[in-house]
Amino acid sequence: MHTMVRPLRWAMIGGGQGSQIGYIHRSAAARDGMFSLTAGAFDIDPQRSKEFGISLGLDSDRCYGTYQEMFAAEALREDGIEVVSIATPNRFHYEMSKAALEADLHVICEKPLTFTVKEAEELRDLAQKKHRIIGVMYGYSGYQMIHQARAMIARGDIGDVRIVSMQFAHGWHSEEVEAHDPGTKWRVTPEVAGPTYVLGDIATHVLYLAQLMVPGFSIEKLMCSRQSFIPSRAPLEDNAFVLMQLAHGAVAQLWASAVNAGAIHNQKIRIVGSKASLEWWDEHPNQLSYEVQGKPKQLLDRGAPYLEPEALSMDRIGSGHAEGLFESWANIYHQFARVMHAADHQDTKMLDTIIYPDIESGVDGVRFIENCVRSSDNGASWVDYT
Ligand code: NAD
Image (tube, rainbow, N blue to C red; front, side):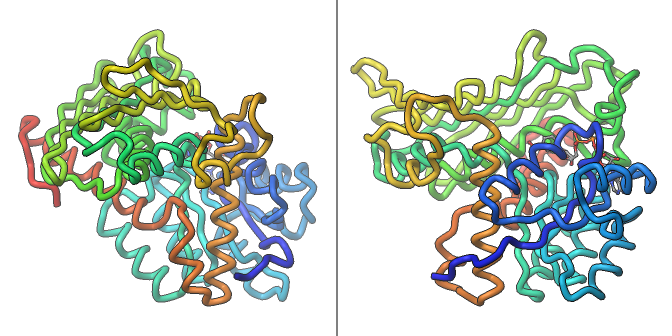
């Protein structure tokens, strides 16, 4: 096993001053000293991008106006960047990821990875050809209780999986907030957000949790009904229901919403097996509910010695204290660093053992979106999953 001797030289595109998600990227990447912020093109406005980079303590000659300038200049340096995180609105993800791979960089990209499966597969093929890694920022997948659930389900603790119930249904956009909030406005603008709003923005998160927790999670058929309760958002939906037929006779449902008035986040996943169920809720991420039919419910706690090693390996402070989204993201960035280091050293054995939101999970998220749109455009009919 290779040990990292120095942090990876890391850059950001997007995530500028006032962005929603830039700060947690920087915080997570910095946490274990495995990435060192070296350069950036942080903002759509070149001047603001440079000023923000300098305010973060970067050398002014590593603060760029555009990502194209950054890739060109960094390629000429011996100490040039090795990996880039892309935290811009969706419409740039494909072109920026492609340009980064062509510049021989590893990529960490926000979800949804691309607008189409064709684009996502093209990135996958390019990454393979270049021996580079693409990580996708499904930021809830680093919670240790998700990995506890994964281990318990694999061991058969809940029996055969019958039902997967997923929801990510918040209420923050119950009104037309985009009229005065640019961060919401682009999310309901097809040219910037892509073919969907809540399906791409939040459904893909909880879908990835299901894929992580349930071995062999595989959709065979699906039907999707989507609505725009704020009419100006059409054709993009602010609410969607998806029913799925899974392999081995299991079924699933997913509710994604931005108009669930009064709800904070309401990201929940419940896996129902033939003997018991497991349930996790991101507003109480340190607990996992284990419910065996006919017995009192058990609430398993993060950091407790009875957890599986896979879960405990992600623990940062021991039991008692609360952990949260920042720890989940730090765990994911930690895995990104390990897998990128393994790729740099052609350590194929290591590459196969590291669990992280990889390019396949990015492609799968976009595939889910495409199938949902096909079904809803067909009068919410059942469609074969392609
Ligand atoms: P935002 O609108 O708050 O911020 C976007 C940032 O990108 C801004 O700083 C903007 O100036 C910059 N930017 C835009 N175009 C650029 C360009 N061409 N070059 C350089 N910088 C550019 O958006 P946000 O809410 O931070 O979302 C950004 C991405 O992160 C989206 O893809 C979104 O889906 C994703 N996101 C993910 C999570 C998660 O949990 N993983 C949470 C929120 C957002």
